[in-house]
Amino acid sequence: MAFVIIYATTAGYVMHYVTSHPELFSFLSVLNMSLATIATPLLIARYIWSHFRSSPEMPLSIPKRQQCVAKLTHSLMYLVMFMVFSSGYLMLKEPYSLFWLTNVNNLITEPSINHFFFYLHSASCITLACLIVLHISAALKHHFVSKNYVLRMML
Image 1 (cartoon, one colour):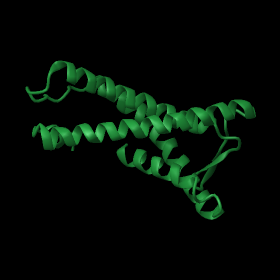
Image 2: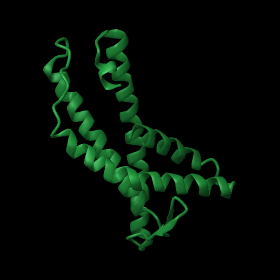
Image 3: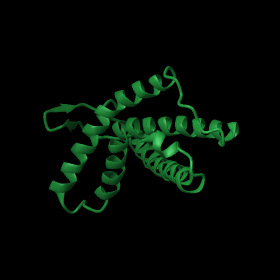
Image 4: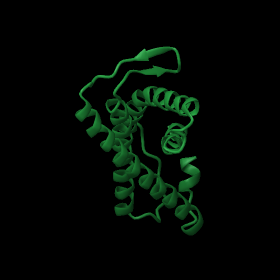
């Protein structure tokens, strides 16, 4: 999931700078949409699984309140990832190619609705990027400042 999110975020922003190169833009777009198509059901399954698996033991030095904030932030990350994937699909005005093998039709063909989902997608991408920075910062803080095993546990 981390690879898909990092790739999709990077490709999404890079695509704004390569619009004058149609071949590169098309390649990034097809790969971006294809990975998101595969990642969406995996994201849903992973979120559901996260509620049934046992949570790892946190270091005793981490207050319960901080653990609750971390759980809330993780749930928010799942929600925003789902919003990014679903709004990315719903903003499309035309069908897209799934790994250059088959076309996938879009559900919505009303331009004003597609436009709404484009803005929702943009806002969700920015929110996700901020949450990723927060997540990475917290992991590094635990490793370098608190000197506990949270980062090792994540890896």
